[in-house]
Image (cartoon, rainbow, N blue to C red):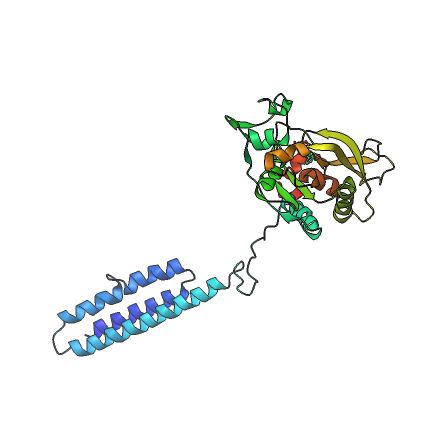
Length: 337
Ligand code: FA5
């Protein structure tokens, strides 16, 4: 009996020492298995109690139980000590502020498009949209394009099926709007447009904002007044514009609108190739030939329209050297705006 009690004391002392010395979770677990596991040394002792003479069993049982209790408490204390130590290791400072997710931002094109539409909304225009896959009828025919116009050629526009193409401009929205609404019409139509173009100032997919006004007594002075108000709001308050004669099948007369060079203010520099002007958009008075397609004949109205390149406007405003910067998804570029 005394032999057993002595043995229990010795094992307990060894167990307490092992738990106390364990400096890692793995070592502590090994010690627990060694002394308290199913085949652990203290657990084994509790089994030998049954083989003792009945008179000795109570005292021996009590001694083993006490030893087990003490060993388990020491193991728990050691486990808590290791957990505390681990949570205080460098790299796990719970007082540090959490890691914030970087917030995204609007792409420069979307921002420019919104900004352009807001300016026209302040001038009394409302925003409408049209489909990007268009029929030949809306993209060309109802816009007075002759049947043999080069942009109707398969080589020039991006056709996606018989008589179906990716719209080459936002002008089809003019026809779609006039079909649905009676004058007065004051709308802008932003959206994506597609052409077989690809160089530093032209992209196969780009963006336009179409403008259309059809009302009583609209003249070219209204066209110039509205576009001048736009240019001063979008670029800077002293931005001058000029109208240059041009041709579009759906406007008559037609004009390219240039702004005074954003770099040199009109004196002439590398950007404007010495001319002092930069081309911004196409425009003109709505050709009355369109009215027969949309049932406006006899309304006694006149109108003007314009088509503004959004990518071009962003390039001019922010001094971008290559249109591809807008489409490469390089955050070092995009995060500047
Ligand atoms: C048109 O697209 C006419 N629909 C504009 C218009 C509307 C005239 C209403 C009259 C009345 P144009 O092909 O010039 O016109 O294009 C207009 C603008 O789109 C250009 O000034 C340019 O800024 C932009 N643009 C044209 N092609 C590209 C391209 N591949 N990449 C980027 N911008 C382009």
